[in-house]
Image 1 (cartoon, rainbow, N blue to C red):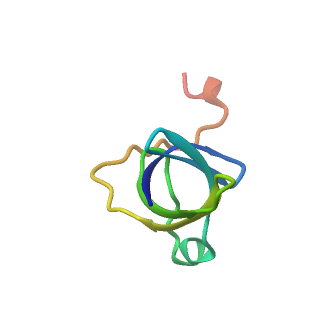
Image 2: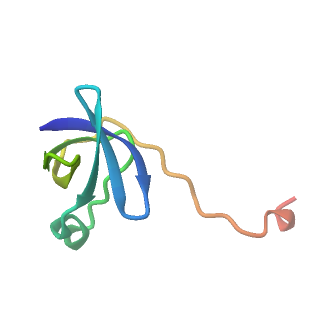
Length: 77
């Protein structure tokens, strides 16, 4: 199946496909390769009848936005 990640929370990725939302997890090979699924990514996934499954492939991103980690912002101004 193919769908788009709409939410990421505590290691779970919620993928919408054909109007239904599936709770999925990323396979270990993504972590080993350093590929992290992001909200908005199009993915291929497998799902069981109970709406749970695994992300099998992340499609190529067309763009992305990276926010730097910031701390103690009062010191900057």
